[in-house]
Image: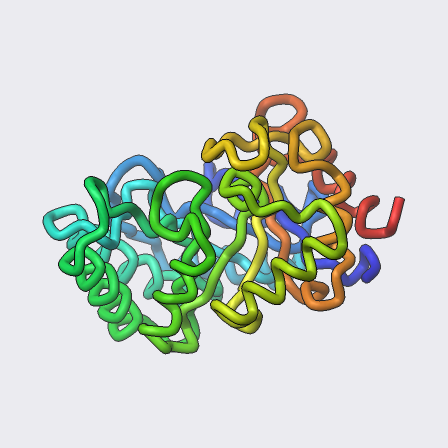
Length: 283
């Protein structure tokens, strides 16, 4: 894999409009993007003007940034049996309908948690909410479940596989975050260990369900169950893991999105992207 065909991007701010994030990632040397549709810490009604949609589509085409993803609000909990679960479902239905209008591939979701523990009732609510979201959103969008780095739904690959197989919908995809995998004690530090992990993922989930990677280093040790991102090469995941991922033939067509704190503390930056480009070239 060479730099000119690698799909590499960042999660960036939508301050000033969605199209500003497109311009920002292009300036940083990326060709893919992740954004929030609105503030991730509140339930928001999305009201985007036709003009704003047009500007976004034109900017995305002009700068050749693709794919683009939404990251859903942090408030989502699809296993909640009460108001939060219902709000989560409705929020994602609105977001995926907007994604279709913007040519955005889908929404990446922290699925949530069972709170005091998994019950059959909570599990049924989770599956029902996912199924209803998929049934009420456009066929050109994906609902993308992200693996967890702490004691929440999707901490183990087996759990993601179970959900995917029960739902059995081609629009339900998976995002793997390297910091979360590290926190959950998945060791990818050698070519052999990465191959074993990918074989296990293919068996339990299927590799064609893997939509993208979040590429983040970690401030914490392997198996810590702590989700604290660090800049590439500055944490405990290690550059070798990123080099192996970026060069693996089974992953070569996947997008890689950074959510790093930035070397200046202002979020994902050009320097993090350049480090990954160099690693992909074998430097």
